Image 1 (tube, rainbow, N blue to C red):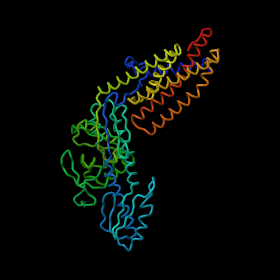
Image 2: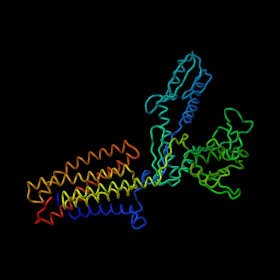
Image 3: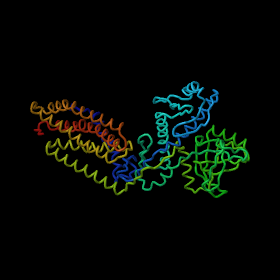
Image 4: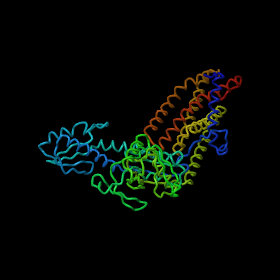
Length: 517
């Protein structure tokens, strides 16, 4: 156990030097050095200040949209099977209509078919059927509504992440909270107004034709207004292409009108649709609609077959840039409402860092004094292991570009305590072995062998707890779990491997000296 080959010694020293290489850039003195890695430990919201936003998804419009889609499916099946119905209407999460009671059995069979009332992955049906004389209600089940909310949440969190990444915000923390909330933490961002503006827009882009007077009817046309001009337009509900067909959108400048614009490109499917629609409707006005707002309504003068276009609407340069970001990131499935907003000032973050580091230094110094007082030269070896442990933890966090928070600092402090515990176990076991064995090499070797199982048991059980905290927790809890997990692994390396190497070298070089521990 106390024999180390040259390869083992070289491997241990290499690991330590790699840790030092990634640790040093975190010190202000080495910040601008080109020799060291650019990877550093990022400070969390509670340490460097920033903005905190809690967003809630308004799923009501999405559920209403699903109801409308389902109503079309149901009515199509009813007409297909010659079922008489009338007074078709919507209420909260349900479809209501009247029917001929003589056709109840046939109607019930149709509404329970899988093509109409499909099974939900989580169990149950899309809607439940309630009869009240000749009135029938198709009510969305709780499982279906939860599935709609979950899908909206999964899609929204990716789009929120894309929009924030487009702005170049460094190390945002974006996590879900329950079924319909998203937590966004933006360390270092003092003014979140730009982010709030981006997240507050659904950004559903559609290209539709402005209706001719002869085409206007209540089913195929809706009236939309333009915020920039105040004009109102009768726009067809039929969508030519949507934002899903976009592959790129970039801000630009129109030299003729001396105004900012957004240039966009369509995918192959969108290009073919746009080419066909523009070819058949030369001379008609095309409404470019963004979130129910008619941004512009250009005239189609010729067939557009290039698969690209331009959106103009008296934009400022910033508005054109924001619109391009929104279109590239994709449309949100449902509106997002900011229900909580907090800002943490850099002074408060600085105070947290100072207190966290101060507590770490005080605890570390007390531990070092205790170890030297109790175990003399072996206490020095223990302290060297502890310092190396801190360097390795910081180095690993830097390699992964991890974000350090106050709970993370708590995890590091806990790791220091566990490292001391391991050293105490080793040296107390050595004391017991020295009472039985006068040969120092044999006594230390036996002690390290016997204590290995105990150290592994304590570290493995704590590591399991760290994994559970990481997978079950979120936010600060995850930060604590990450530093704790990394700390456990580095503690075992520095205490049992590096510490044993230092002890072995010392004993071999002092065979004739009386060793006191």
